[in-house]
Length: 388
Image (tube, rainbow, N blue to C red; front, side, top):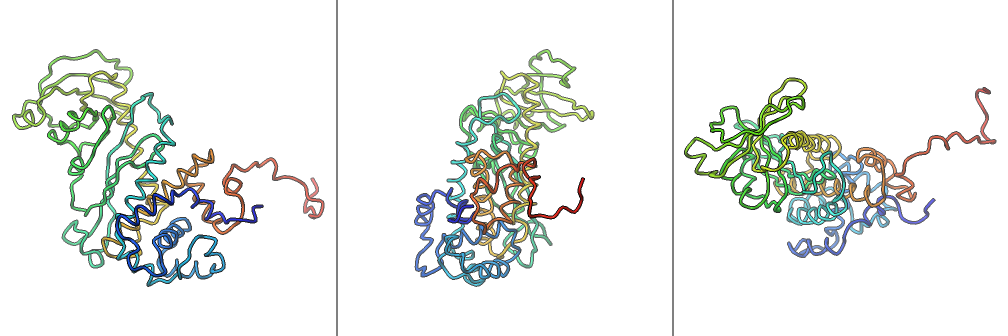
């Protein structure tokens, strides 16, 4: 047993503290702060994410009950509900957004060579959004519908390691396609999207940047076929065509040729995909779109296992602060998993951390795979209930 640092402190040792201080200084996060620092705020919110706290009062009660161990957690300031609420309300959410990007870049380097189901050297992203419903009376700034409030979490997910490469938090009424204006894709990379992102002017901008896209086509697409390639229908492919757009405005926005791949899955559902990549095999285009569902799984996972559906504050700054710190914890756990070479899933790691956060076991020992065969060791001091 490790008689030194508790598990929580060992996890936080993976944080790049120098980069954290740079993010704080960039936005004057500790201007006129006397006791409750930005690090205290981050650690308190990280504790809430790792142990599934439900409110600020819940955080306060749990941390005060462990007052003797707060110093070992790295928390120096006095924990109170009002102090944490004020910090979430007033300190710029961009501190946590920038710091999350630091962790994301670190995680991407660790997962750079991980397979994701398709043999491609290029980086492949999946772009999608999820809506988090809110109460209009409490969150009047989060415009969505007449009688409903919501925020949208737009995410560009790197399929290697399921690491979010880009995240934008907007009001619920912001259409998904507008996020394409904010993306900067590296040349040669792939971006896989659903039909909600079909905007030919924006897709042509991606094409001119040297990146590739795979997007599901709409059923009323008006085009003319230039030529066709042979396909193996046993694989589910139905056609592979090079096309040009017929509608004047669409052809003006996307004057180059496009590739249209039609595919039927095992359940008989028909799909049509548009891409600007003319060299990949048609079945690979269909397989790339299948991998897009990983971003749906990512949204489902973070909603179930992180605190981003019930918020500790009602202002826009407090909501974005909580979401960005939640994303930071997700990425931090992914970094810990890779650095320690763990085979457990992120869900299993979070479950273990939630009950061992104040233990003084070595982190690897607490998270490593259990050897069930070694658990049946006889103890001579223990009476046997059944003699078999």
